[in-house]
Image (cartoon, rainbow, N blue to C red):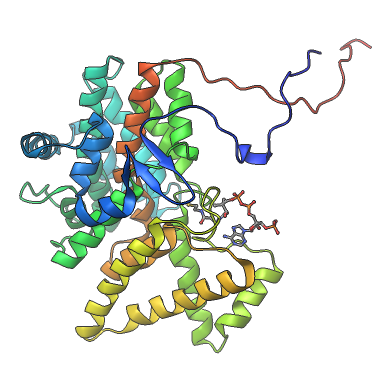
Length: 387
Ligand code: COA
């Protein structure tokens, strides 16, 4: 049996560099999208500008942004086959047979079947397909949610940008200015993150010279898991469980001590790269708290109380475990404050990350080599079948 020439990698490939990218850098002291720092983008850019930056490689000027924005709005309609599937999808969700991420993954596959350039990996075709996916995924999510709730789907609103239109798809209402900004920023924060698990998945698929829709469907499969994108749903579910326990007389501290004793992973905490804290988390936490405060001023203090509870959990985690919240923790809180259905938090992540995934597929195809690492064999020594 030939031995691998390489030494055993760390579990989960921790700390290993798996390739090159010019799209983003997740560093201990900064997160850069094509050189722009995430806090700078969150403060000054819109999601559409960031999506253009990722897909086209440079900051759009006013006319480029106008064209891009019009293109996205013009591509929001869904092909009949996709609509037909999504209109049936609610039943699969309600019966527990499929999650919203499963349904979105299938929806993207069907979208590939009817995309005229599905099998074309040329740069121009891939850019066209990326924009179509980016434009259509919010409608797919909205149509699926309508089917889940057994109501009519909300028509795409061409007066609204990407974030506000997606928000309306999910809630049936136009967001307030503050909600729109917080939601738009959440999409900026989620758009890209170098070789995270789902992006690496898309690159592995693309590197076989497979097509963009296959890569994105694979990315959705990887993002679904609670150790990755699924953490934004898991984080709020955990906080609601904690609130319920507190309502029955349990204290946050004793709940946390039990969680530690059971070696339970607290969702929305920890990060493979950012051991001193996720740069994105405080940005979204502050915006989410602002939303909760707005609700409190309108007479409902329950969201501010949930943020207080979340902050108590963060303090205990920091003081006793030196583990910090990642972006999914404030995301769960912020989305919950706006009334977006919890089951769609991770699909919303897709509506944003599809920009980063697509950029990576194009980058991979532009300078491709099959991604096929080796493994340290730990099975039995060579033996004969007829021994
Ligand atoms: N809750 C409790 N303990 C945690 C933790 C969490 N969320 N995240 C990490 N830890 C602990 C681990 O149990 C481990 O402890 P040990 O050394 O006593 O075994 C230590 O911190 C190191 O963590 P490790 O699992 O090696 O980190 P990783 O880099 O392999 O995993 C995550 C990173 C993100 C998968 C992990 O932090 C996690 O599962 N977080 C919860 C899910 C989540 O929020 N995912 C979204 C990521 S953006």
